Figure 1 (cartoon, rainbow, N blue to C red):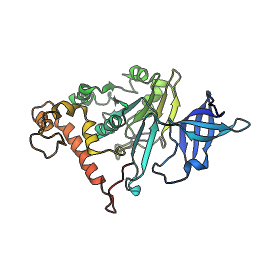
Figure 2 (figure 1 turned 45 degrees about the vertical axis):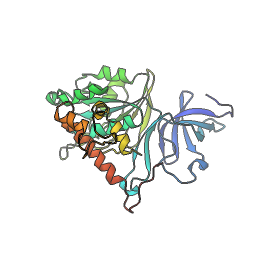
Figure 3 (figure 1 turned 45 degrees about the horizontal axis):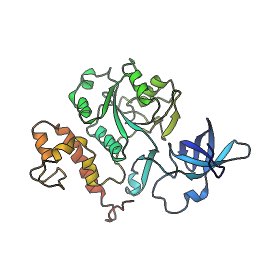
Figure 4 (figure 1 turned 135 degrees about the horizontal axis):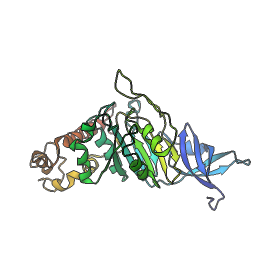
Length: 321
C-alpha cells in the first residue's frame, strides 16, 4: 500500500536496536528508523515494535528501506521494564493485536500461582481478548482437569487443553489463530514454540526444560511476528516469569477482574478495593464459595505490588504517562 506522499506501508515483524524487519507488499524488507524518530525523551524502550504499522521509503534498488513514521496503534501489550529502570520505562511487547494467548503448562514447569491471572489482567487492561491454553496435558491429566482452570470460563475467558506431544487440542489451537493477530505469552518451557510448530508447521527454535530447576531455557529473545499461511499473524514472545502491566492504577486492577464486578456491587463503599474494607461483597463471595480464594489471593498479590511500585527508589511517585 502507498499513501499520498508516495510512502509505502508495512507491518513490523521484528524490531531491535533501531532496525526492523518489515512485511511490505508480500515481501520482507530490512529497514532502519529515521533518526528523528529516536530523538527526545524516550518513555518507551523501543520506538517501533512487532505489530506496528509503519510508513517507509524504499531504497532505489528496493533492497532496504527507512521507516519515516510509526502509525497510531489500536492497542498494545506492555509491561514495566527491568528493575534497573525502576519501573519508569515502558516495555511494549507488541502492538495492534486481536488476542493474547496465555500458555501455561500443567507440568514441567508446574503452574505458578497467580501467573495466569497477571497475564489475563494485562489483556483486560489493554482491551485485548484473553485465551488460556493449558499445554502438556498428557503429562498431568489430573492437573489439567482441576476445577480452577474451568473457573476462568465463568467470566468469558476461553480455555483450551493441548498437547504438542499427543496432538490433543492442536487443531483447535490452530483454528483459534486463523485470521487473527495473536501474541503467545508464557514462561520458558511451557511449550509455546512446540505447540505453535505443530499447529502451523512453522519451524521455531524449541528449548528443553532443565532437570535441575524444572524451568525452560529461553529460545525466543525478542517478540517476533510471523505471517500465517491461512491468514493472520502469530507472535512468539520471550519466556517470562513475571509480568507487571504498565501504567496500571488500583481502580483499573480492580476492574480487570471481571468476576469481581457483580459481587463488588454489594460492597458498602463504592471505592472498595476488596482488601481491608468492612462489608466487602467480593470477600463475602469468597467466603460463600462463589469466588475461589486463590483468585482473591492473586488479586491481592498484584495490589501489593502496585502499592510498592507507586514509589520508586528515590521516593518519587511513578509518573503516569
